[in-house]
Image 1 (cartoon, rainbow, N blue to C red):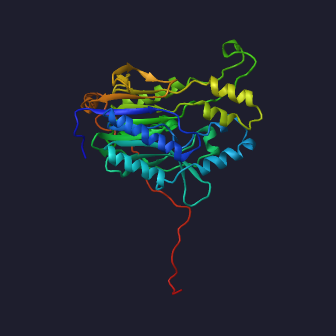
Image 2: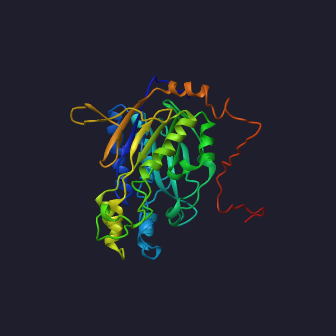
Image 3: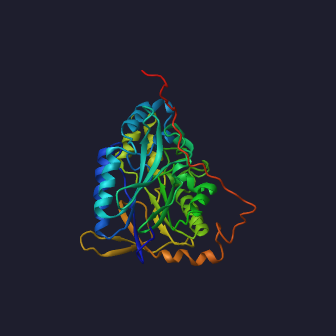
Amino acid sequence: MASTLAFTRVAACHVAPRFLSAQKSTDKAISIVHQAARNRANVIVFPESYISAFPLWSALRPPTENHDLFKRIVQESVFADGPEVQALRDVARETKTVISMGISEKAHASTACLYNSNVLINVDGEVVVHHRKLMPTFFEKLTWSPGDGYGLRVADTPYGRIGGLICGENTNPLARYSLMAQKEQIHISSWPAIWPTRVPANISKPANEQAGQGPRNYDNVLANRLRAAAHCFEAKSYGVMCSSLLDLEAIDAIVEGSGSPETVRRALQDSSQGISMFLDPAGAPLPAFTVDETTKVQQPVEFLQNEENIIYADMNLDNCIEGKQYHDVVGGYQRLDVFQLQVNRSRKDPVIFTKSGFLE
């Protein structure tokens, strides 16, 4: 289904979930979809693991403190064929929009096996891509299991050929190449609100007075933007960066029960919030805007970071063509006789049951 529009309007929802509540997070998402659709968005993107939480506690608290939080995220994760995703399918069909949603996904074969997943829902309400993150990153391994190649797909929608990867997967050149080789025009990269790799060295001092205490964290915003821009430049595709927002509800829940509450709170509050923005097929920032819901006036912005809102951009998909003249990395700028990538898209079940050949 080729794009039939001269421009595709994409909405990146820079929003916080209702922390560890699948139903409330879904309800909030549906309200946001209606809002974005009223502002003529064709594609509506939500952050990584929006339903219903990103397990930041595993970065800052020892595993021995996190049993209750793990139990809660299991209880508030969702099945890919469950009622929460069905509600999103219904609203996609109702609004004639494409929805990209990050979920913490339950597995039917286990009471506690989870995946960091993303579903892409088409205008007819069908899930056209169901991707499980190939490898949980760093502390995510304490919550999520490794995914598979089943979801390494680009969907042909009325608003363009859309693919996506979750957070650190955008560092994987083979995963990215597999999407480039499917004529990707819009690439979605979804991210958590923050990415803490260190805790404050001395909580008694302000952050700007901790000189000499060693690095506190890498530049999360720069790292994400570099990865997203590199993909756009190589694929000659538009980029949608969509990060979550860390709110007080989440901070309080993660701090509660910690053996070092002051340190955990400081680390959460001091970590740089991620950004939501758009990139053009050369990897440069794409002009974007927010919408005043009272006046409907568009306000130009480059990105969203510290406030909850929806950022929009209009994309002319014909602009994905010109750059292919000089760098078509899956065509004229590739040596197919030298390099070959093989992707296993099978989805494996942990057990296969067969019926006996005898009458029971």
